[in-house]
Image (tube, rainbow, N blue to C red; front, side, top):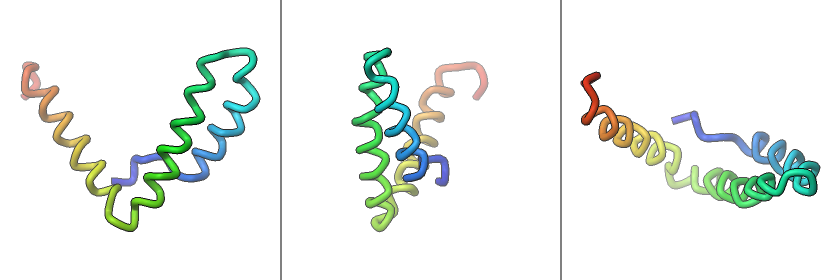
Length: 70
């Protein structure tokens, strides 16, 4: 439930993307990710972090269902 990146992580990603985008065009992908992280931080008021944790659990169960680990 607490595995989603924090706003501080988003701020660090923003700074790193601003510095690196001219050298590495893939750094431009950091800007929309920052927006998603900040949107998720606002959505914590409606328990988005719990929904995120449940979605990860379901994804892991789905992926392990086809393997020999389960």
